[in-house]
Image (cartoon, rainbow, N blue to C red; front, side):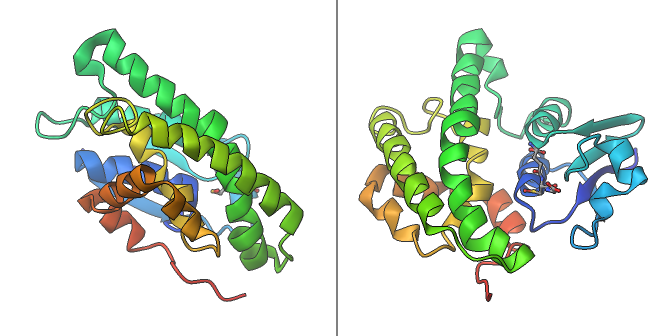
Length: 222
Ligand SMILES: N[C@@H](CCC(=O)N[C@@H](CSO)C(=O)NCC(=O)O)C(=O)O
């Protein structure tokens, strides 16, 4: 069968979320560039794939999907092989899958709203728009992030990974924005949370993560 297609570019956080899952299950894929800076994500062709005019979009035969976490779940369900890890916890029944869902929601509802403004203010806006960092937004977000990381530190003192003793989709979802957060001047914040720091280093050591972050910049010049 022809490889699946991911529309976007490898440096984009939400595209990276999808690429990570493809790498984890070892599925063949084609990354179809969408020239973000040229506004290609707003063309009729792309809006046809994603009505919100965002990247990623995804195509598998006649199926076209958007929303990176939904695309990622599809990939993990459809392209899982016996050799690839059960990242959605669905083998373990509803209880195990529920724990993956809880911490995947925590990433989307608590972690992302705290960490992403720091990444936008320190990296994405300056690089994409030449905008100045709004330090008030950064400071407020860092305070919120400290509260969230405190909860993570507690959780990781009880279980090896967020959803339990196995690595899961919940852990994986933290990669894209944390990767860029570690390129901001505030990376040292993680040193205040040793279990979170060790969890992050464990995530960064995964072959899938290494392959995906090889295409993501770690240094930014404004
Ligand atoms: N919830 C969606 C967010 C996609 C998104 O904002 N993508 C960004 C680039 S990646 O950060 C994007 O397409 N921005 C373009 C725009 O907002 O115009 C998802 O997870 O797929």
